[in-house]
Length: 411
Figure (cartoon, rainbow, N blue to C red):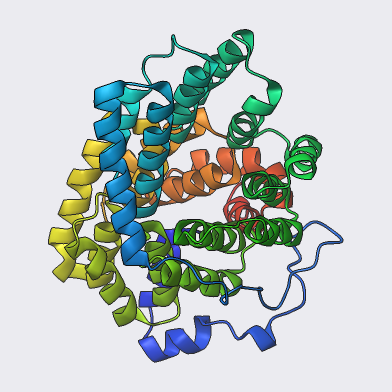
């Protein structure tokens, strides 16, 4: 989000009523456009959400997911088939994404280490490495998979994901993603196109692609509905600088799947920003009390509680240290935000932000880096990163705002 720490601090700098009045956006009063969006793109007053389609109950879906993982493990241990491994890896990735069970990454790591069997094994390993932000190694494995007989269609989604992460011009990727969506016309292809369009700054086009992706989904699992809503929310809040459009999407994500950890955290941030601090505290405390493996809820809860939240901050710090030792690339950005804020170690935040920028050069990485440099009081580094990031701001209003703020203080 646009300077997560500064957003939360802004919410706490005034009384709850005053914050709600000053910060909670009134959709009817919003201007019709965001000037930082590339010319010709409009910014809508509201978002379209399909609340009518029914899905499996969240509790049943969670139990079914855990049971499916247990069954796949048992079958894989008995039979050891590549098909079972593929299914197991997919299920573990889904659980980690939805519930913050990041210990599942250890199992995925072990399951995907043997890449000798087939191009598919190389692709699965590359997918895991992409998840933990080891993009150079993932690219090499995709190249190896191509040499081993994988088609470009098999590789395209992973290749585009990597290219976006490392800062490639998304305009050059749109035709590839559009052709895939036209040819396959399925949920995954339209979701991929939505991500590319969002990176290009075409937020309305991306939103339409996200909605098309959901239209193409014919099953009843709540995970797809929740993930779709969350990704749309992240786009509007953290790229387009429209948190007012993001909040109903985050609410839809947690309505579809209440245990969706990252969606709850993002929603709690907007609740706190709107002055609804007690609501945010209650939301985060439920996650922490359930023992989630993601340290963000504890970190934010500790920040909201101030001095009373020291134990939660300590809990988050200890968990971040574990995750950073295991998967430094995957947690460098969130770790940087934590140490720049409640973690109270700006130097560590700056080091993690710089490490993150070595692997990825997208808008999010620069937003994190600028925040870390500001927290650390490193004026020269903040100015240098702002100058680097300035061209990206043309398609990323949140970054553009942070860059302008930084450059105003540069010589």
